[in-house]
Length: 259
Length: 234
Image (cartoon, rainbow over all chains, first blue to last red; front, side, top):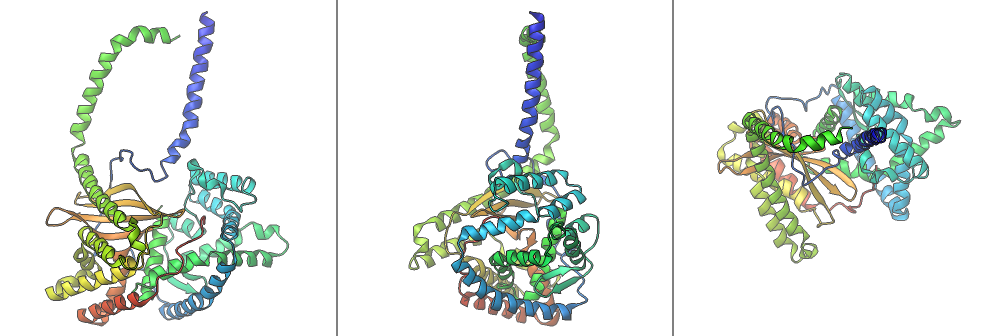
């Protein structure tokens, strides 16, 4: 009798432990914006009125002439060339195909995001990226369907790139530079782009690297409406568009590095 | 093995646990005074913002909003709500920074008005109506002195989640008002500030006011962005 109840107690303890482990993904659910639940006590933070004292939105711009020229060129390219072509493309392409292509290329970029999560010391985000990649590649038909999107415990982490990794390691921005077509960047983020370009494993596995680059260019074109919408949101209401884009880009990158 | 012991000890333990937890609660409450004050402020700020957001959403959800005949009256209602929760003078003063005291009171008024006009033309007049947007309140940050609160929200538009934060302070009537909006980490005040600094270095306040007003008129004439539908997933 005593032996029997001992075994039952061990079984109960193991069951409790198993439940506790299974319930830890629930903690990840806290990352989804949760409403209505009693709010945690607010974080006491630093100055929320640092507009006069902080110049964190300032960045060195020694190449301003070059930057302004390419900014103007990109503006024409984006709004006068790419935008009308893209609108025609959207008119003839079903939405499902466009989101499928989007999901496919997003999934394909997994190795870089995973690597950068690890390099920044974010193992949990790396695990989430891995989980999403596996689910989307298998059930999601090689990534065309974003099955993992609905899965609450594995909410998508921020997209990490090598520029953010360098920032997390303490690299300053350097200076601001505008590249043709690619758009605003900084010295650090440009090094980041180059690093990601060389670290991407897929071109090494394919015979025809140009096919891959062409594919990626198509992927970017496919989601050009988001790029254009974001660009227009910043420039259309700006009194000084060049300054506005530069400032918005720097603020956004700094917020991303901080996260 | 332990269960019988628990069963025997439970009636004795319960009152002890109760007194212990009461005592602990009292101690915690006593010590959390400053945190409580901060959470009071945070709660008040969030409540004020939420009330405004709910009222605005109620107005734009009305079917009459998509009707061009009824839209102007409803837009005026929304603008009134916005003027209650936004403090355009605080907004404008921070975009100009150190130069604000050098503006005459008349220039300050005109600048705040033209800036409000620009924001209205950019955001309010382009908004075509409610298409299922949701605003979720996700948390608050309180400044070191406890007088300013950043209320963090997530705006959900068709599968996209955009983090939007509102920085708020108490005005002279002790009402909580917004003095900055941060979209995806980009502070609107800081963004306009860098633009205006250039202009103020090269010109006078009146010229700046004229530029802002001209921009507001230009934005008003632009057609609304075609197609609000974005791609789902990213």
